[in-house]
Amino acid sequence: MDRGKIIAIITGIISILLAVAYLVIVQILDFRGEMKPAPITQIQTQFVVASFNG
Image (tube, rainbow, N blue to C red; front, side, top):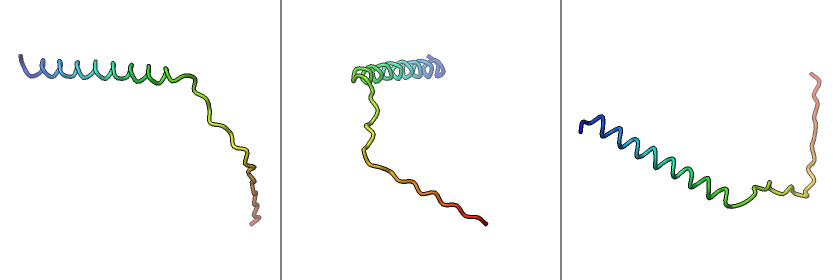
């Protein structure tokens, strides 16, 4: 086999492995359940507005 064909086979195998790994990761993340947002804290925040006339 010539060098170009070997490189094509190796990159094809790497591509298939990356695709399978991606699908496995997506399935694991999907299996965890519904994604819920973080709770909003009960701490009151105060805003200060300053105005300077120049």
